[in-house]
Image (cartoon, rainbow, N blue to C red; front, side):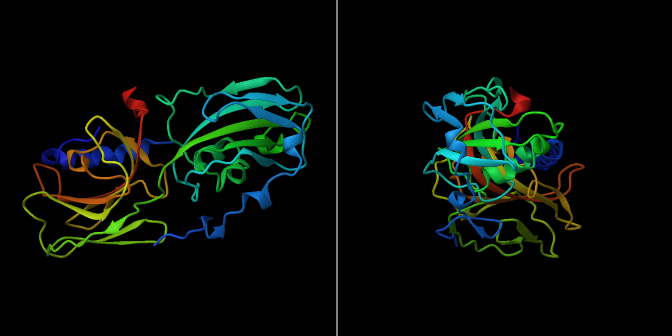
Amino acid sequence: MLEPVRRTSAALASLSLAVLALTGCSSTPSFDGAVCDRTANASTTLADSVSTSGDVGSEPKVEVYAPVSAKSSTFVDAVVGDGTAVVSANQPFIANVTTYDGETGDKLQTTGYDASTTQPHDIAYWSQVSPALSKVLQCATGGSRVVGLLTPKDMGAQADAGSIVIVFDIGHVFLPKAEGTPQFNDARGLPTVVRAPDGTPGVIIPDSAAPKEAVVQTLIKGDGPKVKEGDFVVVNHTVLNWDDKSVAGTSWGSTSLVTSPLPEMVGATVGSQIMIVTPAADSSPAQVLVVDILGITTAAPQQQQ
């Protein structure tokens, strides 16, 4: 949980540690620069071997016409949602998952389908289960039901083991970065933020001394819902020390953080990018925090459950 701005230096340190502990828009979505085309990459026969029914977000009824196998891992979209597409390996999304034995059709495991407890994950997380899941999930859209078929090799099993059928219900897909209207801030002596195409911020800290009081600026104003007290927000952040301009912590290129919002984030809209500058206090150095608010989730952070 983040702390108020008068203790933000300590909060920034906690935020950095939390991240370390965690295991102009185009009209056509793309993944790592390649235009999304799930139809071209999907199986043309898997739908004949696995059928699903029921609403996306509720545990589906699945029929596996076993045995099911393939020379390489593949997928098919049983339901195509109209939500946001997953366009990067670290973009968080909600997914409920059930797996089946491709040899027998028996259900193996399920994550459960409770929105109040389902944590956001990303493709990088699921790729630790199997690298083939990157192909299964790239460019999937919120509201979709994706049926994947994983070979024993891609699951790390012995060659004579059966394939695994995995059914993903993709819920809310969070923003990959701050998206909205850039804001003009006329404040001399404060850091300047530039951004890579993927949203990763670069923070240019001036050589002048840090301000003696906390400063909060909205750099990008998103058009999503407002953050309220008691919400749990999904964010990317970067923290820098003012004096030596070193990066104290960042979630970019890693797992986004689910946390309670700082007071400075309450009232901000999803899609916004906020910069908070805190002066030195006690043993804490002056720091700069840049936060992208990617969304609001109903599931409490794991450490708060």
